[in-house]
Length: 217
Length: 217
DNA sequence: ATATATATTTAGTCATGCCTAAAAATTTGA
DNA sequence: TCAAATTTTTAGGCATGACTAAATATATAT
Ligand SMILES: [Mn+2]
Ligand SMILES: [Mn+2]
Ligand SMILES: [Mn+2]
Ligand SMILES: [Mn+2]
Image 1 (cartoon, rainbow over the protein chains, first blue to last red):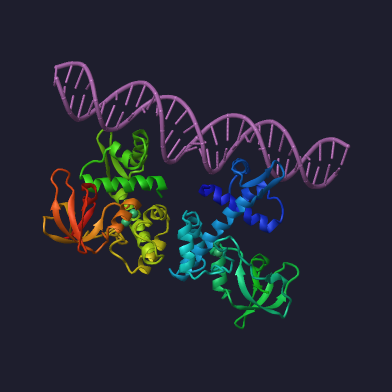
Image 2 (cartoon, each protein chain N blue to C red):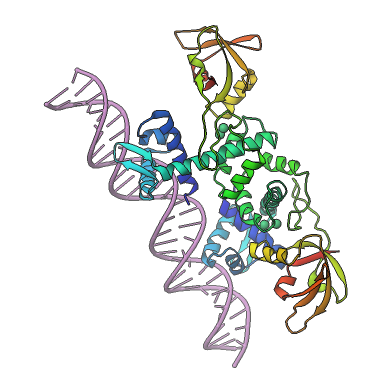
């Protein structure tokens, strides 16, 4: 049984592996977890000794299959709980991440599976992110980042890759909600901001926002 | 914000206070929490310094109003989650205690209150124990212990004061479930066991069992 | 009343998961 | 290519929440 702290490291390493497609570095993990590099080194040694990942000094770290299994289990729980909070307890998508950070560490396979069933085996969470099934399998819907859409084209917003409450409140305020249609009106080369149209209203959003929004297909 | 460990101590001290009507002793707490007396002393000093209870060396300990508030909040969460697991996720009453021991430490007042509302503000949990409301108030149904019932009399079983899975499975196996009618047929003086009748079946149960069963009124 | 038994506290350790500061390895770039 | 910058590891500490063993206070029983 990994501890809460170990689970958080493993989950973050998994996320960074997906993003980087390479060994994950100590400093990257430290930054994401708001910890010091020395603390990360300590933990990597421990997880390596527990045989949950492959750690090479000065090179980086890579989950093995046991580590990946744990990561997927934690992600599954996180996203199921987020779904529960929104669907059953009337939370908004911007309020659920912090609570799910706690709930994802509850240990009971039966609880997870019964929750899954209670929610009718959802495949995506309130942010459009895929929910792994009992076996850790999931199919990510084919998406493209909004920054790849050409001027004049329209796409359906299906996934956001930033769960922070501030960011999600900003999206809500601007009617950028899962399922809405976004048309690209104009792209600014100098700062990569773009002007979009939603429900006949036009406004501009910065590169930092654009990069977190994903469209169907 | 008390830690998980602090919450567990406070919850146990609250339970012992209810049972003993006096200062709670170090050894009693140690026994209940499966810890050593010296560990308990350490924690009592810490909780006293945090102003959650009154600790007198060699005398014992008593929660103050701040400590009581925390205890009631943890108990509220524990019992709401147990109710959720049974009512919504199809768990049996014997499976929920251990999971609720984890869930009771999740920190989000909104979560607790939304859960309460989702469950329609239940007043008792699956074991018949009262659930404190948002303000920590609850009314315990007037009950008598089965051992007080006289031979020939019948009562309705409404509360069990032992959440262990083994004990509850034993009750289920013998059709002793919340709401059932229990008739006292015979009381043995030498070991305080009693013979009861449920659904026209008669059998004997030991003193240890009897003392955990409570009847209406 | 005093010796003995029991309960409780104190002193000293340990594992976990963090930290700072210093050392060592690696990368960068003049 | 080799000095400087950056990254990573090591060394040494700290807080939490446990433990054991020893000391001390309280309760009990002759
Ligand atoms: Mn999230
Ligand atoms: Mn999410
Ligand atoms: Mn319980
Ligand atoms: Mn209960």
